[in-house]
Image (cartoon, rainbow, N blue to C red; front, side):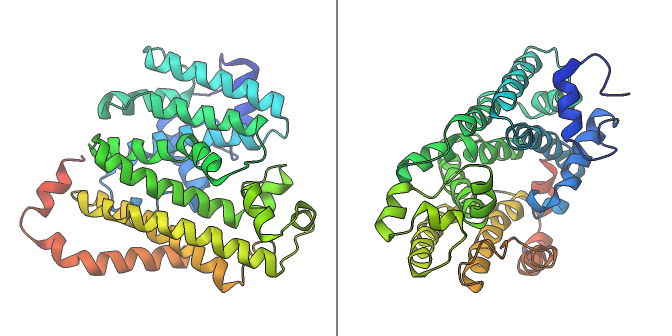
Length: 318
């Protein structure tokens, strides 16, 4: 089945943003290919999840991935805005039981199977639309307001996939997801500026005496180092405040929750190891580091997974 049939110009633009060979995949295969094509940002420990749950995670991830590409890859804020509004309408059609685009055909099954609410999906579009018109944030609180729509919905959706919808776990997830978003901002300062966006709070730049001219020229000086130390310390605090979440999750889903935090902290550690020069070193989590984090988790939890009841707890996600 081709995704090209009957979706018009907007869908054609979406297809142009997809990796080669993805556009012609059947809905669920499309979502899985999108996940593999962007593995760097995919859930670190997803290999531990039951197959049925991995399929649903891929469907949610594909939706988020297309949102991200529509926002960042067109090079035209007006076009991105139109495409995101179209994507929002496709989302509404999906929740009304009339999905059309292949991503939504797969996502509809996940929504019904896991009883996912629409609001987190819609909040993500709100954040990406905000990116088209807001390029600077005056205060840290302003930035946290953006993260409430851009990052926190992903964690809430993941909790719903695992079967949790209580406010206590969602609050802890929000702390972790905001911290992950901030870590991503700090590693991508240069590429974000190339897109015209600055996520470092303006009041912080003024406080530490770091100018936008210096940012434009990728200057790493004492002011920038102090600024980054400050932002990273705040990000670590958010990770610490949300760190109890994995202990409140049953079964192998706890691995992904814990590894989210550990991968985010690994990014911060990498920034520090490179003396905060995020312009010349993109401080991402390498495949080797992801494997090491996963292996450490498996070794630490091997005994617990062999205890009576572990298999039954895992089966709830099938």
